Length: 594
Image (cartoon, rainbow, N blue to C red; front, side):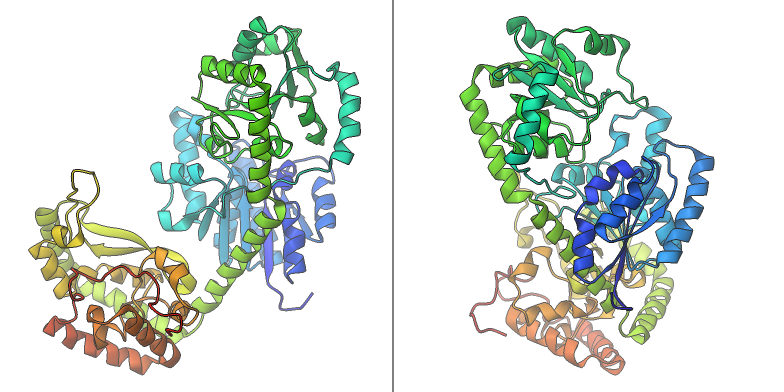
């Protein structure tokens, strides 16, 4: 390992969650990274054994899953010491308690790149003071991170609905999943499955509804037992195979526990170290959950060719393609769950087709190789972003001083403008949009709004020209709408001078040379703005942007700022011919452009 090799530290609350990381640490080590891993409670030696298998350094830090202030304070101190000892360039924290404690420790230790891998939201099914506390801790954990990787699209949507974090911080890698799912070799599982048939008294051909996971309220155990009792009334030969066990933190009702233990058709396998041999025993997998991140068991079952019945819960609905790889039913609806399970049992050909479709989908989107490569590339991109952010410290110092002074001196005019915008255009006063910044990394840009939200009969926004009011044109022509971007400069998202931040959807359309405009922070003004602004073609603007990147100096920045003042006073180059602002960029017009 090179002495200056980049370092990454992974942290989870309990060692049982290390499965989320299996193979990732090895992949990063093979890419030349120094790798460490930390976790709390679990079987003795589990963390050390995992670290040894992945070629990583182990940092045991006792952490409790439930809230315990004294123990949490001790864990925070130990985690801070572990982070300081390992000195990672990238910190990836996952699971709620580790997200909070390791996130705080990483922020306190000034780790350059901090990632929170969100596996789900416990607060979704909490109520009262507990929900408020969980919401607060999630917000705090997310505030400590530079990026929040949500393991499924609906989980990211839920984060935004609950306003837990700004949109620019959150993302989903590929189609989702924390680590992908490996399809086991049949030659390994078949002998074990055959043995289990005898042990569990499940002869070949027995229709089996399977469940894998913790026996808790949030997993929908009440609905599962009610649905099974309904199905078994019509089909007495059906068995319910439960792989897992109870959890005291979220206990099932007493009558549900009694039904599990007393119903003759219910078979309990308990917690098992390897679930793979159990899936071939099942006809269909049921996952009537109330909340998920991205249920691994649903992907594992699909990888084994099983159809899956799950709910519309966050995360769960991303793991099944309704009508193609399985069935999706409303959360908490035992009747709909029973109907879907009965349909899977009554139409075995349909069930097999959906199972085969699910298996193909998992192999296409969720192989560990694909998912781990996405993660490794993501870490590399963030490290490059951090490296670029450290260049030209003098420019950054000038930006901070100038933006801070500008906000101080312009506080009264900014307040007046905000009042006028609210009076003439309504709320919100600020226009917020995610834009690509340094190294193409997203940030939320602030401007005064200049358009109304008028929509046509189809519900879509009207064209810019129809929504841009006379007051909005005045703000744009004088560039007063750009003044809130001084906040972006102060935060480090932007610079006073640099290429203008465009739209996220333009990133894949750039040529390699055009993409160089993201080697510097975007600016409030730039070389293209003082040499034609929106009157230029896209190709001309990009060429000027790249020229600035290649020739930037503090003296050039001062020259551009002076030229900007004159340009604003003349109010030229505000729009392109035939457009209210600029036409949409659809890629360079010729293959050889730039």
